[in-house]
Amino acid sequence: MNTYSPRLSRLIEALRKLPGVGPKSAQRMAFHLLDRDRAGADKLAQTLGEALTGITRCPTCRMFCEDASCRYCTPARTATGQLCVVETPADLMAIEGGTAYRGRYFVLMGRLSPLDGIGPEQLGLAQLQALLDEGQIQEMIVATNPTVEGEATAYFVAEMAKGASVKVTRIAHGVPMGGELEYVDGGTLAHALSGRTPV
Image (cartoon, rainbow, N blue to C red; front, side, top):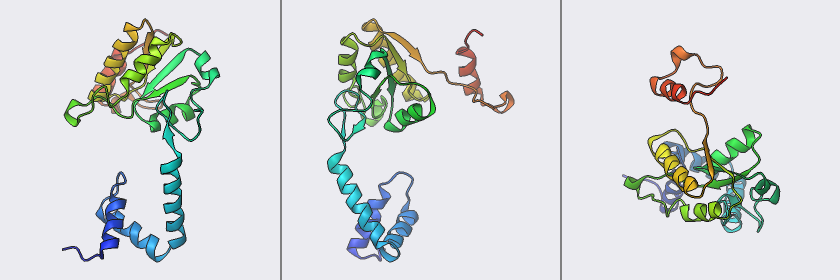
């Protein structure tokens, strides 16, 4: 039985839409915002509204951007001839913040998953094909996650690149830095062994 008022119920339900937020966490957040931080709640609502109206997707790389020019599609990045294909904006930020890579990106906003209704159209693969057909990309780096869907997506986009005569590479997966072989699971170890490189 729901004992919340209608507005409180709607607030809790809205908070539950955030990833990893269950009913109790949503209730705690709602109570905190209403009881202890109404100014913070107002700021959150204002900032969220500004983000929804001011942030769009780049028509070229599909990353979130605020201006007409995307910071990940600059002429300097285009000049590298590299295009890194990632599943999500979070993956892009991980590569950008943790590596020296400064080429272009293409954000799929997901991975192929027919059971969930996610096909080539939802991933913007027609846009990716147009980028490949421009002739400026010399190497496409596939950086999808090592899941079943991620591997299927990697294969699909790699075939697209090969069809456009673009060199395709895949980020390495396997034993993490500082890891010990005896503690690595069999699947990861098999992937690392099959992807071994010359020394």
